Length: 318
Image 1: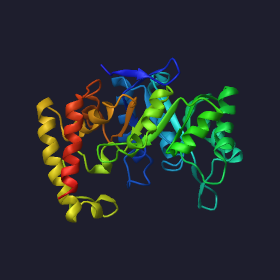
Image 2 (image 1 turned 45 degrees about the horizontal axis):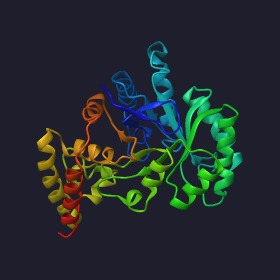
Image 3 (image 1 turned 90 degrees about the vertical axis):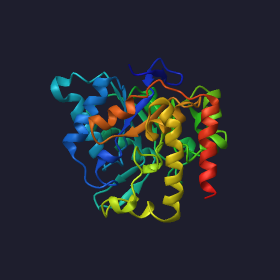
């Protein structure tokens, strides 16, 4: 049974593990198998995951199209069983140059495009993926709030906003979800007070990069085992790899107490913070997704949370 949590100030209850589709976009993580991606989406929905996370920039619309197809395949039996959360900011124009834009003009194009690719009207959830550093926060989020008021989007929020920008957006309109990077290896969103702010203001929080982009995978692989196009080929070597190998081994001892992998421990660690509503995790196959979903509802004691952090600090000194 998949555990669910309140989605901010709404009546929607979201699964605490959410499928992320950045990798399925097929551009930033090397070539992907579209059939496997579709099968994974279907398997997650069938298992009880009721939110799929994506963005216009994931394959420049490709991930959105895959989700739309997966939900409508097999007689659209999965349509309505899971909401889709997309994010607006990055796109590639006709001149094949990437644009980063949250202006009202850009959002009008995103609205039409996402509705078409996801085969949805209205859209379930839309976040502004990042601050474009040109459009004022008040204008950008105000435009998205207008789409919610008009019925084009059900729920809205922001992603990767600084604390200042998060406050400014909330002053414009209610925020149903805030998406941010957070993991055992990156606690900035907690340490600077953003997680507490969201908890105090009833804003649901979705966290990504919970596995440190491979550092907390079930098996820590050296860079030589990754293909040339994979960014981990260069990252997973040298002193940093040795530190992470030490940490991986120490964390596995804690995970063993519960019969988990390091990946499952890392997921439960982020979910153990009271402000975190759900963890966004990618998967390349139904079996990989099932491994992640197996810990839904599990939480660590405060002592175990602190124990894991102490091991990170110890590894940093190596």
